[in-house]
Image 1 (cartoon, helix red, strand yellow):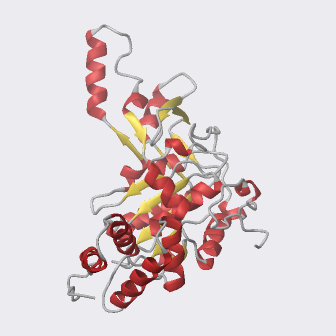
Image 2: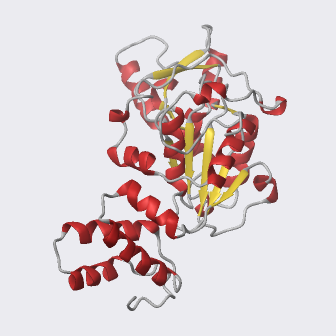
Image 3: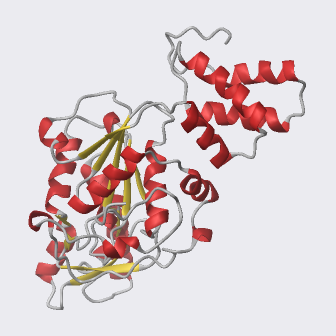
Length: 342
């Protein structure tokens, strides 16, 4: 493996991230104050079992290994496109587990998602209620301070905290977003920083050191934000997934490392099945053959094959009944495809 590569794709955890080459001068960041890693960074018991399995069982291609390393070295987002079921989101979990980047921060995109949703959430109504309660109790300076008690960082905002090691951020299905979100997101990722106006206003009014303790995404441990500004130190490993439902602006594309995942061939499918299931070879190969034949006429996803293999293996049905069940579990994903038979 080239000396600049730190991700191997073999799923075995290691400390290779500490050997990551220095960033290009135009992608170097110096955020302060340094934020400690999440407490459960190396504790798989703290991560949901399905995500642990997804990370362990991910089968990486040579191309994906190379481009993941390119994104890590260049400190650029990785835009992963491909049909459903090709492992786009699983890649983020696999890289995070192997390199010890802590729990993956996940931002699921919808047509209503805005940049602010990913950075932080602030609840002014709960703060107003708290201020009224404090005033009722005759506490001094009730209208000031306490902003941080009603604010929590989002997955993007947390990923950009000044950690010594990069965090992993999955921005899932960005092609479903509003037209403006990719460019809005690009500006933040290009600069590696953002501001929290509510904390900046509080800092201007405060005579103290103007720091605030706020909660990060997926954690109940507060982190320190100075004067309402957040700037990363280790640029996060950002995976942006897309099903190819829309085109992205050229400015957005040229700032991303782009990986296009294709449907796995027979050998890759066999590797994927072995990684996920303890299925007898004969039964697995038979269903893989039928899956590939059927996929030639319409859109299928790899998890449909896994579902069919798992369920037909535990039902105890005879061969004819297993075939009928497998047929029901592997319908075409496209509404225009012919869904009758194999």
